[in-house]
Length: 318
Length: 276
Image 1 (spheres, rainbow over the protein chains, first blue to last red):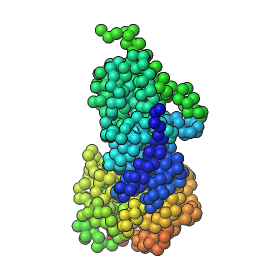
Image 2: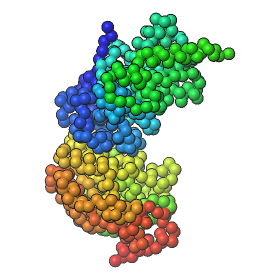
Image 3: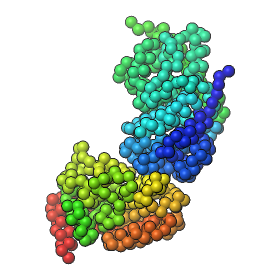
Image 4: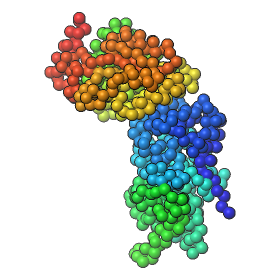
C-alpha cells in the first residue's frame, strides 16, 4: 500500500516549524490560511501573521514591504490568484527588486476540491517562469514540500512555491537531499526518459511500474525546480534514452514541457511528448474524472512513452 | 554642501529642486515635468525637515522610509536626494542613460531609494508592509508614501487603504500630490476621485488637508500625523507644473521633453520666483 500525504498538511507543519527556528519568517494571507494550512503558523505566531483579507494585490505588496525590512514573507492564496491576479505586483514590487518573498500557490493544477476552472491553475508556472529573477519550485510530495519550505526560506530571492491540496503518494524518504535547481533521479532506466514536476511524480512512478511489467525501462527524473532548470541533468537524461516525456499538472504550453523543449531544442534536439492539460480550460468534477478527461493519469504518461517508442521503432534513426 | 543646503529656507530649496528638474529633463529629452514640479515642496518637507535619514548611511535600518508611488516624478526625487547628499549632482546628467543608477522610474539600486516603483497603485501596500515590519523590528521608523491623485484610480490603493487602519499603522503616512491633472486631462474628467477627504475618512484614516506648496504646512501636517493611533493621509493641494507658467495646470506637460529654449524660459521664471 502506497503511503499518502497531503502536500498542504506537510506545508502547514513545515511553515510552523520554520517559524519556530527563524524569527524573520512572517506569513501574509488572503483569507485562505485554513485551506493552505498556513493557519498552523498563524496560531503559533500571531504577531508574525498578517491577515489581509480577500485582496491579493495588497497582500503581495505588503509582503514586498516586509521583505524590504529584512523579513522572509510567505504569501498564501490559491495558485491561480497568487500568481495571476497579482502578476504586476510580483513583477514590479518583488521580481524587479529581487525581494525574498515566497509566493505560496495552494491548490495548483486541476484538483481544488470541485471548484472548477476559475480556481484551477494551469498557467501559473508559465507566467512565473517568464519573470526574470524568479525561481519556480513545484514539490512532488509531502516530504519534498517540507524540505523545499526550509530551502526557499534560505534562498534570498523571489520564489514561487507551487503546492497542491489532496493526499498524494509519498515518493521520497527523509534522507532525500533536496536542493533548489537540482533534479533528482527517481528511477534509473534505459528506454525512455520521463521528466516530472510537482504532483505528477507519483503518477509517473505508477506509470514506470506499469511499463516495467511490459518490459519497458523508464528513466524517471523529477524536476521540482522548473526554473532554473537543471540543464545538465535533463540533457544527460535525454542523451541516455533519446526520448523524453514531460509530465505536469499544468497547461502543456509554457510549463515544464516548454522549459525542457526550449532547452533541448538548443542543446540536444530530442523527440518529445508533453503530458499536461492540452491548452483547454477544465471544469468542476470529481478528481479522478478530471485527471482522466484532461489527460493527467499514470496511464496517460505510459501512453505518451509508448507512442514515442513506437515512433522510434517505425522510424529508426540512421 | 548638504549641510549648507539644509540651512536655506525650505521654500528656496523647493525652487532649487525645480531648477534641477527642468535641467535634467531638458538634458534627457524625456520624462515627466508636470508631476515633478507639483511635488517639489512635498519632497523638500520630507527630505529636509521631516524624515529621519542619514545620507552617509542610506541603508541604516532604523531610518524613515519613503516610497515614490507616483514613480514618474523621479526627477524631483533625484533632485531631492542629490541636494540632501545621497549622491553627487553630476549623476543627474546620467538620468535615463544606460547603466545609470537613475532610472526613468526609481530603482532601489540608487542610494536613498527605499523601494522600486513605476507601476501605479503599488506603493501604499509596500509602505504598509514596511510599517508593519518596522513595528515588528521594534523600530520607531515612519513610512511616507507619495501618491498621485490620478493614481488613486487604481483599485490596489483602496485595498491598502482598507488594510492599514486594521493594523493601527500609525507609522504610515500617505501624501496625495493632488494636482488634479493626469495624462489625458483633468482628473475630474478622466475619472473623478473626489470626494477624497470623505473617502479616506470612510476608510478610517486621519485626514489632513494642506496647501501642497506651503512647506511649513506640510511639515506641520507630518508632525500632526504622530498625534493619532491611525494612519494619516495628507491631501496636499497642488498645481501641476507649479512654478513654470506654461506648464501649470495642463496635462500637455505631464510627459513631454523640455527644449533648450523652454528650459531657459522656465529657469528664468524660477529665478525670478526666488528673487521675489
